[in-house]
Length: 547
Figure 1 (cartoon, rainbow, N blue to C red):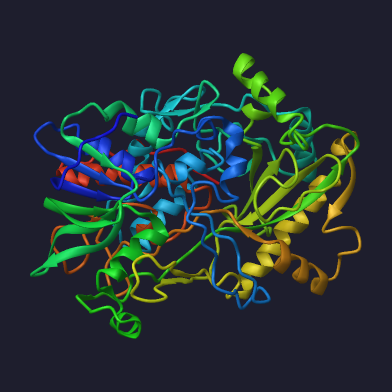
Figure 2 (cartoon, one colour):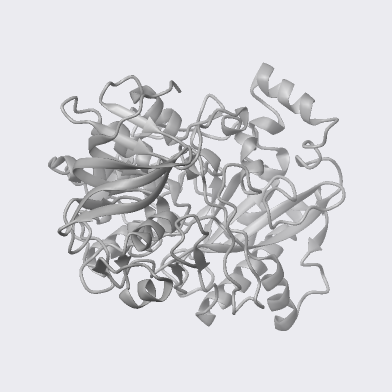
């Protein structure tokens, strides 16, 4: 990505060069009559690990991330959970597992009806999903084929994945060829944000093609400190770059796209948020807005791990004597361990017989120890993650002090609603039952974790508290909608202020029941039209009835 000259003012100043920020910068700069300045605290995505699918395994362990953890979780035996948040151009889309899922149709219909966000129902947002997408397998009412974001089938699944799909079907979960089509429930292959077996982040798919536009400037390694407010209007931001502070002016709007942790953190540092909290940490109150940093939602999962009879997974390929061979195979043939996103099969199912929408998501990992928080076993193994994708627990993002460089206090309050723990344990039971199916006996030697001795509710709870991890899907901390708990209106303007919008996963009033990268990109696509004052894309035709 070519270097950019320094700019101190622009029509639109975008804070955060993540999944949403890259989309916004590319779409807004399509108009040659406006200038766009994108500010990102992290660096460029130059390492080959950002390109190779398996590079994801390094990311959750700290590469290109802020290095934050949660506060002690009072409903998880006071455990602190590693909380990966991207610090690189492309944000989460540059470090995630590349899984492309949108959620259930009703997720967005609830935004429009229950949360009163007009214009955000499923038929309203589907055209923006399609505009973003270039799908290599599906087309028609649910899919786009000529958008910037390449979406493709996995190219490096192992035979154990096929056995897993048969086992899940024997358990009772039907095969589903397209989780983003007419129905979500089922088991199958995940589609991935990849092009030619390379990660397709928003940095590569949206921002890079726009970088030669003279009206677009990107400043990486530039930390936003606070938003400048003048008489109730956002007029710019103060940043720190190369040890110096600088004010960047916004002639039209400041757009915050720093994610579900970074966006509320920046607002709070700017004196925008709940007055009591701001007073407690010594930040002058500029605009009392109680909802900032509230409504934090996240998916948390628990894994079951099985040992295999033989070398049927990708375990061991990251060792020094084998990693060069994997790299060579990838470079020559675009195949092998480095070509795998490692979590490429899975699906959605119900924790109980009376539910009308899936609340459990499964991800099969083609190895053990893939992510930080997942145990590595001796020999070869597979990991089956089960996540409660409809959590009821709500948490907060708060400041530890008025120091703009101090880590925030992240408190998801996992399992504070006891029903979430019940669903999580049912998901774990589902994963164990699938791994025990006859279809996997050719591959699976035994269950290692939780282990056959872990059966009682007390023992399962203890295991869950030790092994549960985030799915890296925080949302909701700058909630969209009307009322005192909301931060932005459906046009993404911050309530009570002029010249300030938020456009990222933090605006979700309720988390979608799947991975969050695709919905975040959709939000930015739709947000770009709202900012430009364009007519919204025509609502999609009436889709088939979903699950």
